[in-house]
Length: 525
Image 1: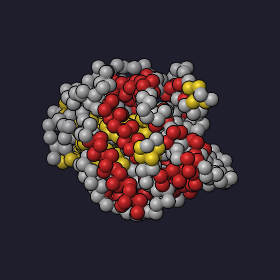
Image 2 (image 1 turned 30 degrees about the vertical axis):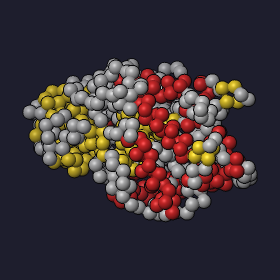
Image 3 (image 1 turned 180 degrees about the vertical axis):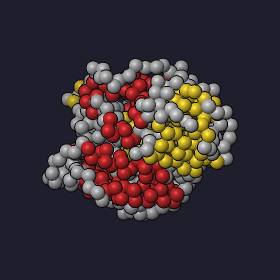
Image 4 (image 1 turned 120 degrees about the vertical axis):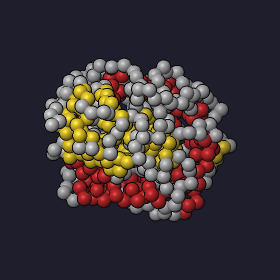
């Protein structure tokens, strides 16, 4: 890939936080030499690290290694497709990870594909060449202090069932492949062969003498064994956009989906006890359909990871332009999702959130094929303050140079109007109980309130380059703590110890004041 001007030079690996220690590991792939990152866990309403700090995760989905029907299958006429045609390797370069780190956002959701991890049925070995790409991505993330959530993506099970790919061909049930696809341009979620396959999955129908769920458990066991002990892994998002098939709502959740999550979590815990377990609702919820049934999920250290494209997004697919009613709808959706997480008894992280620039995204047609590049920024302007108000963790779709629909870096050009909204100050790690935080876009003023503060460094994303080009004044409890110049130099004015990491646009301070305020300019009179 030609290096574009936004692709910044690497500033080297280092600790995510100077002096922090994290778990070592005996995982099969603990190969990199970057310092360990603090391990994460979940309370009933927050993510915390091993120092006891409340952590907020915000970042990008990275689809470069997933399966997609716009790409060829693993094999064509018996010949293995070259990696350069299967994957978007141009989005996994060091320069990409440098640019992501430079935004100050701190997590990626790495979307893998079962189709490539296990292209042939057992007893064939897993695809070592594919996992080497995963290894490399993890190494690059860790070197820059970026957490990673691992996920096996699928959208309509597999390409041979009319879906958008994900699972290998050998997992498709013959009775489902025999169902003719409808002549209309339906999304994969409405395809009869796909719904048949999901019904078989919940019945644990056999393929090659072993149940589909058993094969899937084996896949995750292999992955977890390979990567246990790698501190950059925040957790595992264990099932992407599940469908109920012929199972009606409520029966699916109570009888199949939630028990499945508990069983798979137990299998993972046998190998890697401390990691976060992410779980999702049925896929229709992504379009704004309310959850039919809530109960405490019953999994320790779990996090609810819905794909919240919101009802506004669904309506927008008919006409791509941003309408004024979408703003209140987006804010309402954020509030309702918070109630869902409380019902599960876990914190939440929106595993996918974003906005389509076109009405024909994901290989699904629409009444009209329109394009509006500004609408994505309009959605972000409604979403970002609402997310701040509920201390939301989120992963934006997508970091992709080839996706005109979603790509934050489409054609290697960062969407700066969008990033000017998304890349806003937030508390990456709070040494205490985070009460609230907010950012005033017009005044460019950030305010954070905390209590029960303890003696450890706190971290704030402070986007000096994008939002404070003239420098910033840092105040604590009404008193000046320091001045950050436009060049990134810090002058301490109070008792707090301050550091600024320009490569990650991260301010560290210790101790944290009960009220932290950051303003534009270098006058702190």
